Image (tube, rainbow, N blue to C red):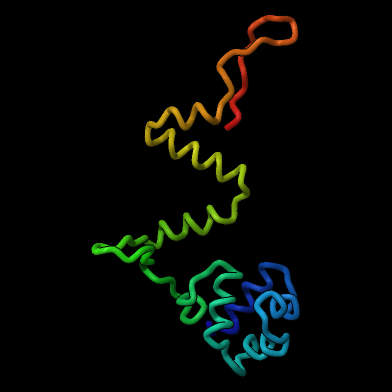
Length: 140
């Protein structure tokens, strides 16, 4: 599959027009149309903008293949992510803040940090309107 077809599929999946995509990434609608038809290819700046807008790698846009790893920071050993980890990050970025909080709570619980889990709950018991103790619900 060509880069133009990948752009077209991403755009259609987002439900936006060529004109809207062009506006978001700072090119003309004609440019987007030419890319999708395979008559031209996006330049470096447009490629980076497309990558950011659709939350995909430039490698994937160019070749249809994801990079195996991503260097997060330059250190003596570097910090690399596997393709599975990158996929999880991509999915995490699509969540709203409440959903992200839930995921973070689950991770902390799995790692055994009960203090983090307790921050996401109300106290185990609270007084109801009649002064009686009633079990509180989890906020998680």
